[in-house]
Amino acid sequence: HLVEQRWPFRLHATYDESISRMLDVFEKVDRDMPFNGLPWLFDHAETISPRNIERVRALGGGIAIQHRMAFQGEYFIDRYGAKAAEATPPIQRMLAEGIPVGGGTDATRVASYNPWTALYWLVSGKTVGGTTLTPQGLSRATALQLFTHGSAWFSSEQGKKGQIKVGQLADLVALSADFFSIEEEQIKWLESVLTVVGGKVVHGTGEFDKLAPPTLPVLPDWSPVAMVPGHWKPAAAPMAASIHQCIGSCAVHAHQHD
Image (cartoon, rainbow, N blue to C red; front, top):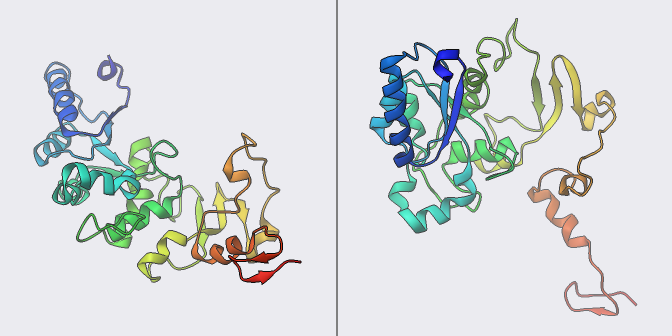
């Protein structure tokens, strides 16, 4: 029905076993009613095999990846071993086969909505806990491309967004540091100091705070985002250490409060 109506579709499939069964069906449909350029994709595809990557390409599909492994990589190694974790998901093979690949976060189901945590994982090949999963990560340019120009394919907006280019949507950010030159570990702590969507400033801080619109209320109001000023970074540690309550002699902080 989807192919007949020319409706793009996507399926969640983490393991290769599921992907194999789904592709069997898609190939059967394709023989009777060709996909013929219909956009479709798998989400996750973390343990997809080289053969199934080829089958996805043959049917004109794409793969949207997320950084669950940045948070759950240690658990994966415990269950499947370090060798399996080296190519979970096998991004390099996907790109080599020439299929569309887009980066995302899948927030807040399996990971943080913070894209810089995901980009750190793609570039370093490490979990947020420091465990090495992949011996060699992606180049910074490739990682960023997956999140921008690469992901535009998945909403059929290639050529409309994903690049800072005349004729494309004016969605862009100025960052707190240079993504391409900072130390690898510092990628995790990047933040936007100026965010522009559709040519309008929607966020500004520091030297750009006067350009920022009024802050919108966080919904639901009990969300931690309403109480935490941005994501954690090393500079926040002294602030956390200074917030305490003690009476009399303090054995922890070694000072008197009388």
